[in-house]
Image 1 (cartoon, rainbow, N blue to C red):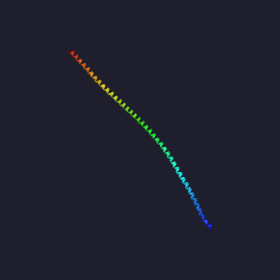
Image 2: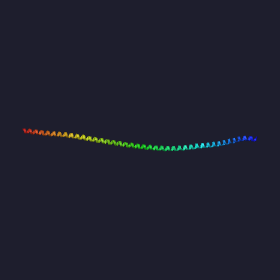
Image 3: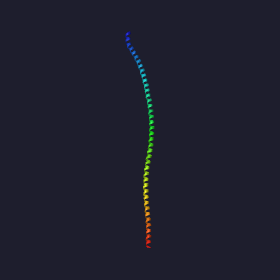
Image 4: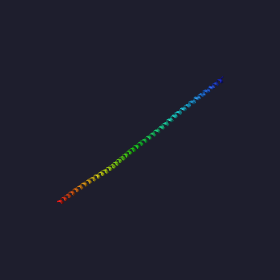
Length: 147
């Protein structure tokens, strides 16, 4: 009797022992898995925070470099605009000088032509006066000669 009961109980006891052992192992595995999950989440959060901090620093550096580049570009643009204004002013002065030289040459030519015309007119007037004088003297001489 007792052995017969014990044999079937033995299976039951083995199942009970293995069941308890399985529950203990599962509980310890669950604790390890929970610990590993928490450790992984903590590690991941640290890595993400570290990467975020580096990215923020890189962004600040890039923002600073961009600011300095904009300032340098502004200075170069202002320098170029000043140079462009100076060159435009020099071109205007050159054009005015060239136009002034053309006007001066035209004035000289027109004045010299006017002076030549006036001299020619004065010469004709002088020749006509001399001719009148000579004619009148000749007439006087011929009248005197006739008398």
